[in-house]
Image (tube, rainbow, N blue to C red; front, top):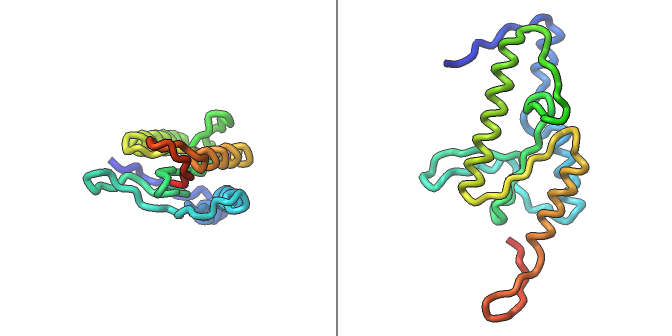
Length: 159
């Protein structure tokens, strides 16, 4: 059953809620800038990922399809950062509690589905942008390291 969205408590609240976007957020733009400066510009934005049966799984914020690497840039408020432990809004508390629980459950379900499909999933929290982006660069650098093939030849590994 769908939750009924309560009306805004004031015109100011209405304007703030309309201004919230799901794409090209400031944290997302910062992570993308760090990736480009780090030498990893070949990502796709909101790339659709389907399971083996062709059913939709999700669209991560940043994706490296050839590397099977999905990156989510989560806002602490909307995705309920475990470190920040932000409180609920003071009005419509039941609505917000349900909304946030569904967001967290959906995030977990998406990550599980991607891992089952063989993807590496990296979540960068808004409160830890610099550190999370640095970890991501580390993952990408590891994927670019050389590996030895069965015939003893060294070969570059750039998924």
